Image (tube, rainbow, N blue to C red; front, side, top):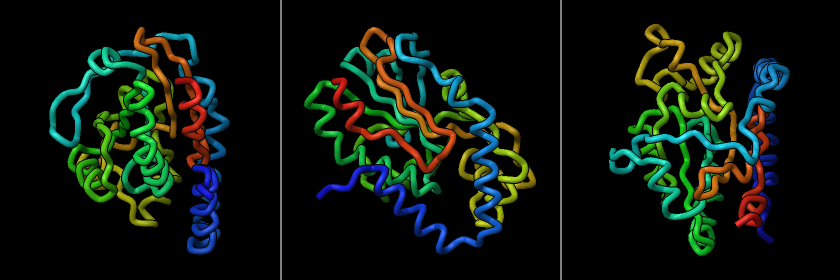
Amino acid sequence: MIRSLQDQLDAITTNTRKLVQAERLAVSEQATAELFTSGIEDNILKPGTQAPAFSLIDARNRKPVSSADLLALGPLVVSFFRGRWCPYCITELETWRELAPELRKRGAILVAMSPQTARQSSFMIDQHALTFPVLTDPGASVAEQYGVAYSVSQAQRLYYQGILINIPFNNAGLSYHTATEASWRLPVAATFLIKPDSTIAFSQAHADFRVRPEPEEILSLL
């Protein structure tokens, strides 16, 4: 039996709680609660609205990819993810990798985007055999237009440093000492389905990075 995406993510959570100290987990839990309280989930662009156009670099070939060109080919699924350091994101992207042929059968295309550098995305593409375009969104600027970007809180910055996740390096090649505010910007996990006329047909974002929409929800709309 094929496990749902959420079942796979829940398994990661269970394992993490066994491996990470409770006091460190409490910091992450608090940061997630604060992000939810900020109302970021309410800021996401809603179905029926126009999707902002974008043109970003494809990490595979370092060439620009525009939403206009993609939408000329059919419906577009856009998956915003945090980075290659996030096991939840990797699990979600691997699930989409397996569903990419089914998407194409239905005439749709998938792209994933993150603020991480093209170099980091290139490593990820090779390591996880991703077949769809992975785009670089510096400073989460496109994510901001879609209503899903935020700045990592000071407490969570210390948490990430404590577990050896260097977000400024992943996003901009910077150290903790040279980090800019832009290098601490991330998207919440979010998925959009955009029609060829640029109208958003589906959108979902979660402040809790452990929760993602099931791909079948998007496939059912195609």
